[in-house]
Structures are given as C-alpha cells and as structure tokens.
Image (cartoon, rainbow over all chains, first blue to last red; front, side, top):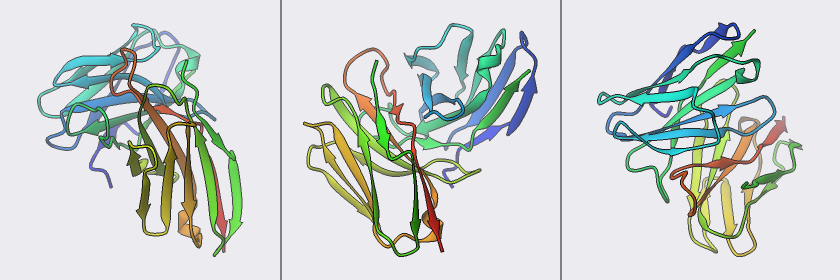
Length: 115
Length: 115
C-alpha cells in the first residue's frame, strides 16, 4: 500500500450541490496532486499543492478548488456540481516538490456520482 | 494539448506468455515518463520513473525502456502470471508550461492473464 488514504470511498450528490473530498498524504510528503478519471479515460490533472500553496493547475474551471493543511491532509472542493463531474477522484502525494524524477504515490480514489 | 497514447487498449494472454505494451508521448520538452500498475479497487502502484533517453529499468519480471528522441516507451512482462492482471498506465511530465508537476496520462492498457 502507498500510505495515502482518501475519504469517502463513494459519494452520491445532485446537480448544483457542493462536495468536499479528503486525502491524507504520507507523513513528510509536502506535495499533493489531484486527478479526475472519467470512465474510459486516463486520470486528468486538476491541480497540485506544495506546502499549502497551489503551484500548478490543469484545465479545470475555478469551481474546482483545493486546500492543503500542515498535517499532510488536503481537500478537493467542487462547487455547483454538474453531471460531467461524475468520476473517480485520485490524490497523489510526493515528498519533494513533485517535479522531475519524483514518484507520486496515489490513494485508492473517491468515486463521485452526480445525479 | 499533450497527447499520450497507449497501445493496445486491452490484451489477453496465457499464463507464462511474455508481453509488451507501448506508450507514445510528445518528444519535445521531455521531463519524465512514469509507469503505474493499477489493480481493480486498489491504488495505482508506481513501477518506474524514467528520465534519461535510453533508460532501461527492471523490477522482477517487469522491465521498461525509454526513447525520448522518438517519443516512446515499452513495458515488458516476462512470463506473465495471473497476478499481473491489471491496468498499466503511463504518464508523461513535460518541462514547459505552468502546470508544474503535472502528469499527463494515457488511457491505459488492460492486461488479463488467463491461468
């Protein structure tokens, strides 16, 4: 196991609602990245946080936001949920800055269904 | 838009067969190429991080090669076992742009090894 945990494992929401997904990184890992995996596709990068600051963002709208805390936990918040937000959400942590040559350790994901 | 392609999409082999899959990625602004193995209901498991042209990495019966000039990587499994059944993902990290630490994933190769 990677030592990265996510909660909840599954979640059902309705369109327009807001959701918070949680990730607990390995102790000492300063970087956390979030990915969205839609059915039949590879994971897509949402954003990355390093020491509580966002330091990289993919092609996702501002209603996707995040927080990283000093205790190596982090959150992904999604406002105004849309049906297309139904996906598996993965977080991944790494010990340094998340850059070249550094392994990202993934959690098992949270499966979100938006009705 | 970065395009990472994996082939084949799925593969069925018999126990004991050796197999290989391909990951194609942009050859410009190369930073790193990651390989992951992802078993159902588990976290993606990091196999290799490859950064240098001509890199060859090995972990047990699994090995990988990297050609950054032509933009491809091969993953080989020697003597496949049923426990090798999983989705194998490659992910590319490029040196340019503002998405520091971003992994761009292929859609994966689903391997099924039949006893």
